Length: 435
Image (cartoon, rainbow, N blue to C red; front, side):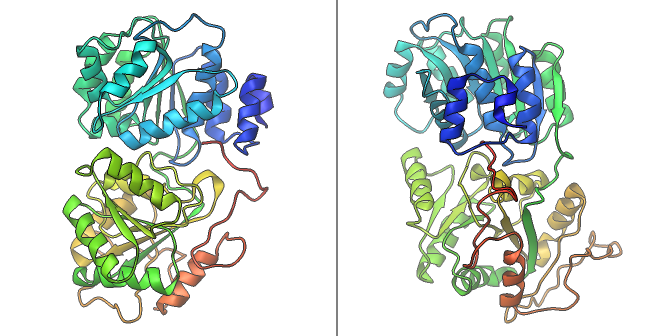
């Protein structure tokens, strides 16, 4: 199957080619025809499989040849949980809609509101927003929802996790009843399904993978290590394997700041990104990371959704998340669009429960490797603490090997060309997945 077979316009197909894409991903192949047919759709797929393009492309086509945009109004509204994801979605709208001259705007907090007000005064075809800033603008009379034809919830489960349910309810009450509603996410919980039943008309469900499954393109590994030695181990991994680009997740903002400072002391260019940083600082940090000006971007879970970095070779969980689903989203930052990726977790004994929860969620036992010189004094038990250990994964090493052997072996899978920490440039047939 190619994009030509999905019923998209010539102008959209040109834009897709410009982005270097040829073959739709499974979620795109299934969702796009349904959306073009005007159906309400609930779509679930793994992170990094092209969900953004799966709703952006048909949304733009449905807006073609429609009514003119009026001041302070929009024809399509996309709600996202984070600023970074909102910016990414609007970038996709610009990229795919460039030959049709669609107007768009993105609004979120943390930046000055006046430039956003100026954009909305002219009216836009597509408005991408986080709920809080959107309600602020509406309360001040700068946005009217009367012309909304399509509503999109992007990463709906994350919006509920972040406590946006009351804002969402307020926004939906302001929208026209006659509209198309789309809900995209990596996972669908019982709460999300209940939410959909209240806001959607006979929605069609599209699922292309096992819920909470991790991408096959991502090699996952656990390095048991004592908590006090985690930062030293991370510096060792970065330096010994010449990692030029690594996204590191911590559980707290303070932890992100402390770790980035320690990495800098160790001669590794690093910067922290989290909710206490200004939006300008977050945007600059992400831009520098994408351009290779910094080696390590140290982030809290605010970056687990919405960061789309092409060919990101590796992700490191410096701290395991206390919500197992967040592990899936974290490691979904690598191995995107069919490329190979590597996810390493530095796990201390006090995180055994978190590790067990993750393994139970993804239904696999993660292979472990002790790094020479960093063997833990306090072992990380297999299986739930207090229970018998579960059988080891078939991929688990039979004996402890040195770090260079472990990382070198795992990073060699699916990689084209040389260079430690590199990743494949596409799928086996050379096609890339539209984001």
